[in-house]
Each structure stands twice: as structure tokens, then as C-alpha cells.
Image (cartoon, rainbow, N blue to C red; front, top):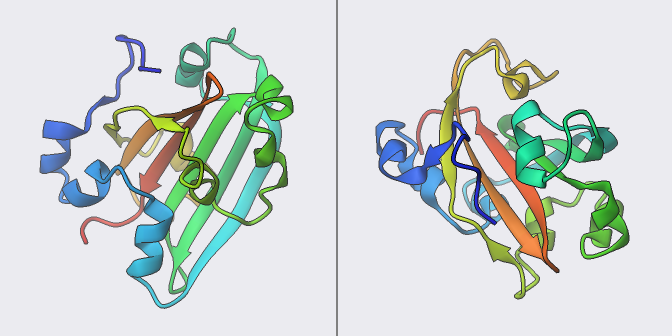
Length: 175
């Protein structure tokens, strides 16, 4: 599933080259696995999981009317005790009774562990954006850490014909 043309997120290349995070923004593999490889201690902190509202620009991606509740999950990916990435995932609530039912029981397991273990899951192209400090993902508790604009990437994982959209906000400026 591709993003609507009105979406303000751009293809990962060439924009990612200007970020200083090109290898992180354009890597189509598991971000969780990569963070584990670059740290001695990896931890996931669950901030929110359950029925909630999506971000305004996510409703067209999900094919849902504005304001409808979705399944939403927000987590901090920690490496060596330092918050490195905010993970934000959304899908229609109905998907929890269908193809994405395994999401209901993730607990503190990363979404990446679930999507990358299913060979039938298709990932969309990565899209990136420099988020301003006022963006909802940067205003979340525990997310901003007194830092201004942040680079983020977004893609969908389609399984059983239903998309799970994942956005990842990076709290660092280079490898």
C-alpha cells in the first residue's frame, strides 16, 4: 500500500542523504535488530497501546474517517539506557480480530519482531520527514527530551491485505 500523493513525507532517497542518518533512514531491515547490534543493552519501553486516535495524516493512509479510533502503539527503543527511537504504530481496530491479531499480545516485544518473522508481510517504500518540535510525535511525553526537529521515517507493513503503519522518530544525529 502506498502513501497518498498529498502526504508530506518524501521518498527516503535523496532526502535521507542530507540528514546525516542516511544508513538508518534507508535501511529496509529491522530497526530493532540494528539497535540491538549497536548496543550492549536493548530495552523497549511501552508508552501506550490500545484504542486511541491516530495522527491526522494517518487517517487517509488507513482509509478511515478522521477521528475514528485505531489500534495505536507508542514505544521508546532504548540502547544502553538512552532513548534512541520513538516507535509509533497504527492499524484499524478491526485488524486485531484478523491478520494483525498478534499485535494484541506484544507486551514489551517490538513490533519489528512480529513483522519481520512473517515472510508473507510486504513492506512499502520508506518515506522520511524532518519533524518540527511542534509535530505530535515530538510532543509526546518522553519523546522530545528538549530536542527540536527530528528525522523520522514511515512505512507500511501489509499482511492479509491490511496495512500496519509504522513511524520511527530518531533521537540521534548520526551513526
